Amino acid sequence: MSIFTKIAVLGLVAGLACSFAAEEGEVLGKYGAVTIKYLNGKRTAIFDADSKETVEITEDVVADSFYYSRNFSGEWGKPATIMFPFVIQNGCMSEWASISKIDNIVNAQTWAIYASPVQDTEANTPYFLRVSKDHISLANDHCYPITLNTTTGGNKAYAFGPWEFTGTYTYKAWETGDPELGYVYGFAAKEKEVDGKMIHQGQFVKGKAGAYVRPLRAYMKYNPKKKALSKDADGESVAALTPDELPATIDVIFLDENGQTTAIHSLNTYTGEFTNSSTGWYDMKGRKLNKKPTVKGNYFYNGKKVTIK
Image (cartoon, rainbow, N blue to C red; front, side):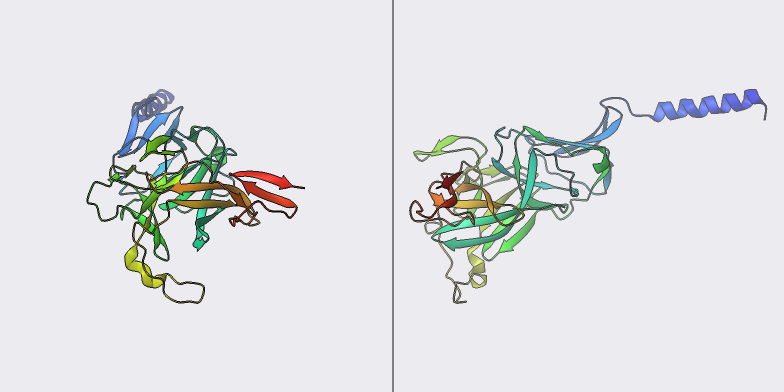
């Protein structure tokens, strides 16, 4: 083959490569609330927090970048829920965001959910998210590429006695007459007044008719049919609670790696989402106190850490 023929062949191959190259902004795949776009030379997975479209990924998809924009409060620590179809490895969550898993749900004076940070997440698994910006992404290029796993099977739930923490890839709304009403909890997305009570962004609340949860998020539900799994301190079965007997708010205690409390929020039982910090005194283990402590040390008061000297 002559040099001119080789040049011609190479030019043809290069031309074909260019013709198949994606253009800036081109959509490479649409999976409901998740879109893969070619941005800045990368296959970028964009997660739409406002979408009601079901996330449907039938085959694994590789992405070089990830971006999730959502109307977070912008104030550090306001909680939310998430469920993503990919693994986030240790050290790959941005410094202004943290992910926690539920460890336990207990009833001691008041209902409380205990959550601790995770280093490596699992795909298709619900978590709590605390963030200080209006979006999240992964920390650096070493965290990519990521593989978006198939979402076949839909929702994924974890049981804690009669309580279930469920991640969802579909839009779920609770209308009048839904048998789950009175048993469903979640974090309030925005501040609003419900039944004469002010619900704050980030408070954990009970869902009413009209409450809803979007894809890529999670919610809490009390399942009265699982009463046999709920035991008291003596190991005796606990009777199922009715909606009227369930708490108006549930404290959410966020712990660090050493089991020390870093923040306390509450789950209000009227709107189905997260709100502001709960009121009252708590020790560093997240246990609610009856009154202001007299012993010197660190405590939480109305959600803020204070020191009694």
